[in-house]
Image (tube, rainbow, N blue to C red; front, side):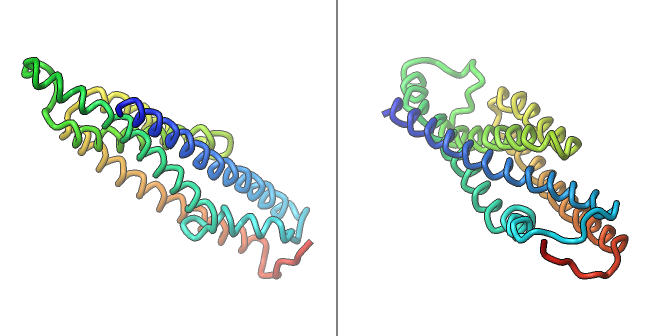
Length: 208
C-alpha cells in the first residue's frame, strides 16, 4: 500500500510539474513578446498587433483573468500538492508501527503523522512550485524570479525542522508574501501599460 501511494504520488507530482511548466513557460514567452512590442512601439516601429498576439494575451497575459494560465497553473500546483501529500502520508503506517514498538520520545517526531504530512506537503508543494516558476521567469523578470527561488530555498530549511508550529508560520508568511507580490506585479504591469499608452497617444490599435 505504501509503495502504491508513493508511485501515485510521484506520478501526480510529475503531471503537476508538467502542467505548471507548460503554463508558466508559455506565459514567459508571451511577456517576452509583449516587452518587444512595447520597445518597438516606443521607437515608432510598429503601429499594429496581430490577431495571434491578442489571442495569446487573452490566454496568458491577463493575470487572474487569463483564460489558460490560471487554470493550467492551478492544476499543476494542485497536482504537486496532492502528489507530495500522498508520498508523505505513505510513511505514516511505518511511523505508527515504530511508535508502537519503540520509544520515540527522544526524537523530533511531534506525534501526529497525518497533520505533519499535510503541512510538509503544503510547504514542499509551495517550495517546488516557486522553484519551477522562478527558473521559468529568470530570463525576463529576474528580480521576481529571485524572490521565488529564495522562497524555495527557505522551504528546505523549514521542512527539516519537523515542527508543525514552524511549518504553519512559514506557510502563512509565504502565502501572504506571494499574494502581495502578485498584487504588486499586477498593479505595476497595469501602470506600465497605461504609461506606454500615454506615450503612444490615443490612436487606436490596428490589426496587422
